[in-house]
Image (cartoon, rainbow, N blue to C red; front, side, top):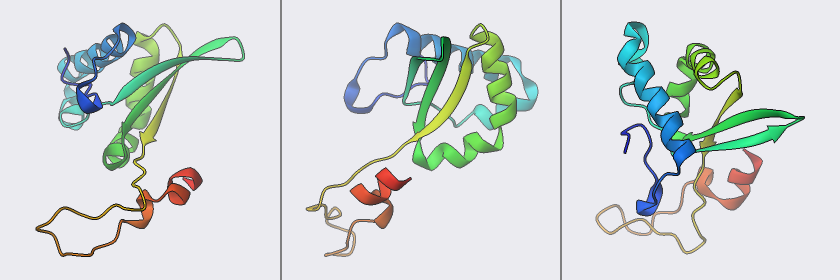
Length: 126
């Protein structure tokens, strides 16, 4: 299993996700300029969709890493599109919705509220 894909709750990545993760790992190994930038980045999932008769790949990344992906977006997308037979590549943040009853773990200040960015409304508007 590649270190470039981390599935939540111990799920196993499928063959396509493994292929995409391996391509990202190969880019990190072969490209000197992107090596440092790709070192701490990983994806959560990859899906293949059909858009207007053409294939596209959607990469789901953690919301906290989205800014880092945007910094190398043009180089990464260009290289991945070459490796994935000309399919379009889109990077999307995987956002987390926390329930109304969410309270932070004990040890953090008691009675703290859930962050606004994690509410159902905020996630759907983003």
